[in-house]
Length: 424
Image (tube, rainbow, N blue to C red; front, side):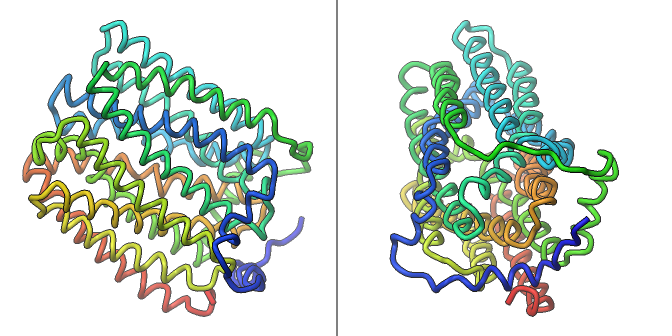
């Protein structure tokens, strides 16, 4: 069995690329046909996904007017990722990642159609939303490791930073369009049409995946499943650089959840803007994220990405504190733009560093741990956000969250200095 190189040696080899140039370099991943297909299909599908996310929050708020239930829906959608992502990562390292993603996208489409049918028929209740959110989380536990691991097969390592950044930009372009459209659709014809569009939108990404031309998957000799799973955890335990990055994004993800969970409360009860205001707030965050990740895509070297992660956390923490104290809706839009700019640069940088450091044999399992830290820990943040907001209010909850992010940034900075040689 080939012994994987230490992460620091892999990273040093990845830094031999030429220095960053003009904006054209940022789009270099698009020279790969498979990646172009992926981006096109995902853009359409993710617009529907964000329409559903915004409409679902508004639906639950309208049915129950409960901050706790808003947090419970996020909990149900994310806790399966925390519990099952290691198994999803194991599957991504043992089976065809391409086929896994086709299967998961098909199941996500069926979930959206089920939610649409319940809502349009007038029978939807909060428990329906909770059950379907749990199903979505189970599917995402397999989809996220498979999809993240598939990126490098579409582009190769030399264009990985461009691919991850463009993928993030595409993700957040959908974050701009989806909630904004959802706000208008919900105000005009209700939430059910948003769920229906999301179901139809999955046809685009499924068609794109089927049209890809990827090397035939050949399964080599591997250890028994349990030993294979444990080996992934052992690799992270030995790799201090990867462990530091995972802890950073995980801690930040917990603290970001109050903003996501409580956004309907701010749109309705704080700024009195209704569903359109919710769409504008989420859209503003998406605009900032698109700008930030497109700028990040121009980089061709991994050197300096730890600084991007640190300053992203600083900007994000300050933005949440400013948002919590704002009395102006327009100032809140500006602040959420800055928050989106910061958080997606932070996540894209961490994702790139991790994928650059990890040997391909471990990629699925390590990206599963990344999914656990970015999404899987969210349930704890969402429940805490709902419970805390019920006691001290949405504003103070978000201010506490921003303060914690600033503390996390300082701890991360100190840890990176201790591992300075590994990240250079």
